[in-house]
Image 1 (cartoon, rainbow, N blue to C red):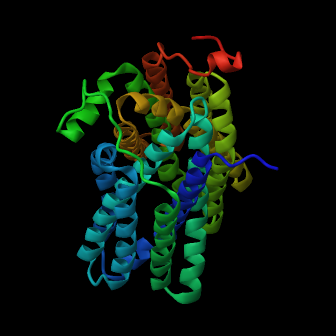
Image 2 (image 1 turned 30 degrees about the horizontal axis):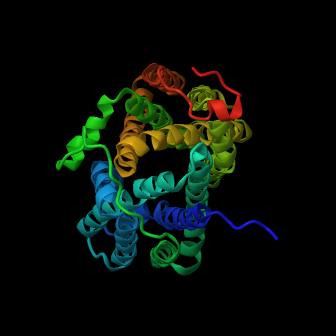
Length: 406
């Protein structure tokens, strides 16, 4: 007779499916929104604002909803966010002006702030000691897989049935995620977190957690990866199409392969984080990113660029579980929702900074120098993270015997 499945695995399975569904649903509309907005008469500036609204408001409100989930319950916050996603999906179909689209993207950012960091916080709370990397790795695998498949499926639906259908599909699949969370993710008693920093002002007090060196180090490690994500997303399509002459389909495949490699390696990255010093696992994985950045402008064609995307995907796959496992450790001390909200906010801001850095460097220095600058900034971020984490002691050192105490 097989042993019973641990209770946390059932909840984790539901969270992974919910994260996959949400990411795929959002991915449905990513390649279609510019066309949808342009059909309504949006200028380039309006399209830029529409795209920026989601990540900007997500970053602003992540800390608030993360801290709120520590006090009101994480499932409740996730349910409100997923319900909002369903309504926003239908709102896109009903939108009649560019202003409506901007408002819907702002609401989408608010809903995303309720789902992403709070899901990670819930996963962090149910993860057993010394298995934080495994749990976060599987959760991120669901996200990367969903986001990799979403644009492709959304494009196919639009080509076959029209632009409105992907928005309906987004509503259906995020509704399925809401059902999964409601049925299989039990509400937990709100956390009783430390009161040495937290008070009534949730946002200010959550950001104040950065005064704790190990918290700042874990967040800095994740943010260094976020800078890389922003640079990659901004510069790769430009170089691939304008310099190498690749088709849009080839560019899409390169981006998809990066996400698929990152997804496939999440469980392995979690295993490494749980059995070796997480500080060094995060560093070694993150160092693959600057290597990939420098290789992008040196690529001679599609296959070179595809190989580069595999290197960058491997960097994400190895480093992210380690960084988030260290964040989970801090969350057990200072409030899981607060830490994960802070972590995700800083990552989103780092992605935005990476995009601005990549674009402005390209204008003034050229493709190769832009990637060298981006690589140097990433390395500096990693050096700062390692300095902040110098006092980190891995909780799994005694269990495995595979790492030194420092």
